[in-house]
Amino acid sequence: MLLREDPDLFKASQKARGASVELVDEVLAADSARRAAITAFEDARADQKAFSSQIAKASKDEKPALIAEGKEKSAKVKALQAESEEASFAFESLAAKLPNLIIDGIPSGGEENFVTLKTVGQPRDFAAEGFAPLDHLALGEELKAIDTARGTKVSGARFHYLTGFGAKLEMALLNLARDVAEEAGFSPTITPTLVKPEVMRGTGFLGEHADEVYRLEADDLFLVGTSEVPLAGYYMDEIIDLSDGPLRFAGISSCYRREAGSYGKDTRGIIRVHQFQKVEMFSYVEVEDAEAEHERMLSLQEKMLQLCELPYRVIDVAAGDLGDSAARKYDCEAWVPTQETYRELTSTSNCTTFQARRLQIRERHDGATRPVATLNGTMANTRWLVAILENHQQADGSVTVPEALRPYLGGMTAQGPEGPRF
Image (cartoon, rainbow, N blue to C red; front, side):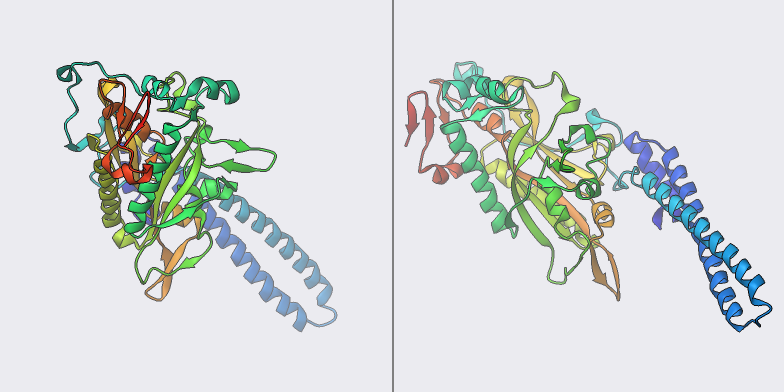
């Protein structure tokens, strides 16, 4: 076990994340106690078996005393088995709290300590064009594309309706994302949006951010915040074949997030909502290929942003802003004119073997089995409409449709208050 061999590596990872360094020692102590308890149980059981054969060979006069002693040994074995199981449970519970080991070289610190890797495209100068840009909600309401008032009336805060052009634009975006992903070898997959606790736990979503997950207590099921979760569970408890290369999926699903930790943030419009649609890439790869697959996913996300003609930047997310399962994460953030800042549209995470170890997903390698690596990355989601509407708005209140989306909208070139334009 790498943790046992190099605990300082994990302590450095925890320090970079701003997480508990002491947890590493606690896990090691629990592992030592577990191994000691297992050894004591197995030694006692071996002794009991040897003693049982001794009873069988004993004389009639010797047997009563030996049988009595055998009962004592049996009771001892049962007690040690219980201690072993308890020690194993304590170890597993503590180990489950330990986040993935970060990849060397990523920035340390919290959310604000990211490193910008590149900036692509030039934000428009609306002042030079002679008008002040409207935000996405004002545009969406003017174009009868977004209705948050009725979403709130029907479902509560952070819900919305996409209507007319809004609905068609989202479907066009998702279909483009699906096609780009499929062309790159990702098989389109419509996933379940309810999963069992062991799947949610195995992917690392019941850790620090468990309060953001919707749970249906009556059914003991969870609503997923990303199709990464059911896609990670697809091969749970299986040995898979990667001899022909990675297994790649493009998950298409509705997603649900409580946004419990974001009270008061982004309450206007559809930037931060409880329900949204998404196309998500997910890959199973050999450990040695994980970093190359991560770069490949990032390149596909950049391709989507370029097809949607959006200015963006790519950031290397700091360790303290990673989820438990990610060893490294890149975000692509698009420019939002009315906020005069970049906002996240995609993320892609290399989860190395973290999820596969928890979900028991393995491959055959050199005559044995070993965990595979898993990676995930957003191709498109509802939030993209924010950047598309704001960046492509015109002085007359219309929104130009990016050229790559036009075939999915019947050739529409723009949407104005008066209707579509072709």
